[in-house]
Length: 239
Image (cartoon, rainbow, N blue to C red):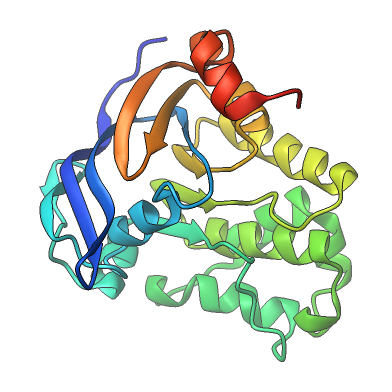
């Protein structure tokens, strides 16, 4: 598959918590219009890597380039304003605010009319349109995940980060979340997905990277990784 431009490029990234290296040497590229899966066991550094892209967890060494610009040392608010949105692990909706208020918060950095964006997310997630005035904390886990994705989309991202979107959800809801992921992929939205459910992640992605103890150890077309005996043994199991 040919892609027109490089959206994200990470080189030799290292991220530390104190003296502990959560990410050691990570290299990763995401091109325009593709979905890339970042897989690995719990503690491999996947969430830390996403947080470092957003500037939430500063990089110790290495570079992060977004649309050709070095964003390694930028503050999170400038990174978000440049066109990166995240669906955080655990969904991160504001439970005491309504669905509509959560969505408006996702577009705060745009400082303008978001009516068209809201119409599009309500078309994609009709349950949220029905519950726009409902307090977010009263939604089910699956509905909160839809709200978290919708909130990220309202921000008009050039790159969408999804951090463990299936975590804590019932299997039928996990399938729904990945159907949404497939729709985003068909719409050519550029997506970087961090996910412990490696099989699902690779099934719905164009390419994949395997992260092991904070290092990029393997990458390639998602279909190849799905059929790689080592990847199957280490990460896919009998799922």
